[in-house]
Length: 88
Image (cartoon, rainbow, N blue to C red; front, top):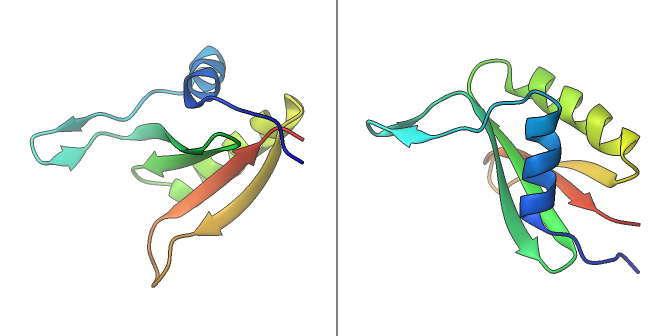
């Protein structure tokens, strides 16, 4: 069973790796990543901006190097791509 994980920990880890946070300004998202808590044992990571697939692939590699289990997923009905991160 997966262990508890916090979105704030993943956010801090990615910032430490040099990634920029996305910000919602003037009705749109600035390029960068966002994390959301999907439950006590899962954090979702999104990337806003150009090169979404490449950025998510880079983030996947970095999170896996930290020992996290990462699954690429897409929201229902052709929605946003995201990464589902858990602690094994």
